[in-house]
Length: 337
Ligand code: P6P
Picture 1 (cartoon, rainbow, N blue to C red):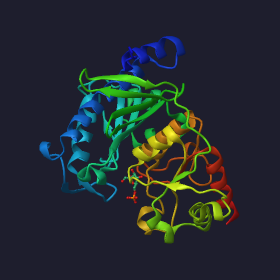
Picture 2 (picture 1 turned 30 degrees about the horizontal axis):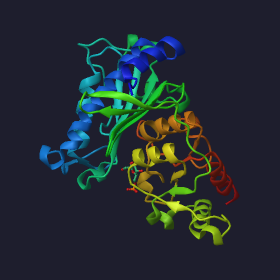
Picture 3 (picture 1 turned 60 degrees about the vertical axis):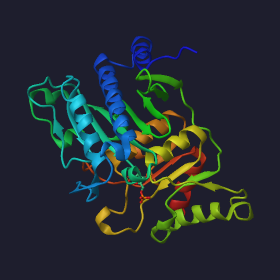
Picture 4 (picture 1 turned 45 degrees about the vertical axis):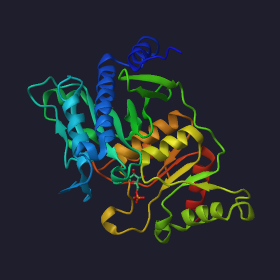
């Protein structure tokens, strides 16, 4: 079966859907190429001297894994010279990375988490790269890019996607015309279309949450999860299953493919984390864009994540995403308590 390559798919999107300016197509192809390089490093494991942690901490106060820094460098170096980006921002960098003056400044901004779920690296569980693309304001052509230029709500995203480095290496992407999955053909080094126009199955009874945080949850979240744990004997009236991979990319990919609901809600954790764990700009927003494009819903427990007005590059936000009916129920429980 002859499959469509990412390059052909993007050219056809540009030709037929007019959703894809040439510069954005170049950006996506460059990111996809960088993810192939990251996948190669991840796959080496102990053989590639890429496991383990560094002595450094990132701006989140998290100990950096070697691969966090390696992947960050790969994505910066792949994208800085192409002329499609004005600047980049990453979970692993305190502040923005402007396109060096020796290269042309582009019209897009990209935010990314180079290795999401990096605590899983050393135990060979799936990790991934998440990216979100915004248009820079025309003004940046005549001045330095600032963090404020990045602080656009999720509705302003023009593209988003993730790569997941698991048993397969998969790229999931949207440019606003649906969600598309590509699988890496390692022999040829090509991304091949393996799921065109992904639609998230609804009505599936599988929830994803870190149960060890139960003591910190709000009453609405506690009620919702306790009902599902009670199963058919309780108010939910049916048995539910649970998964938690501690890798948002892996949990979201599973939900896109087989449905369910993912929760990392606001909770009463130590105030230092602003009562939430996941980052708005390069985790929650891009994943919410994809989930909504695939027919699901994504809120912070109260309002659509993509309507949250950003105030800081690394701000955190509650996340409830997946099955529309379940997200609505969780919102209802949150308002009732
Ligand atoms: P916990 C990974 O560090 C991450 O940012 C997400 O990928 C994942 O969903 C979450 O944190 C896991 O958090 O508290 O269960 O380790």
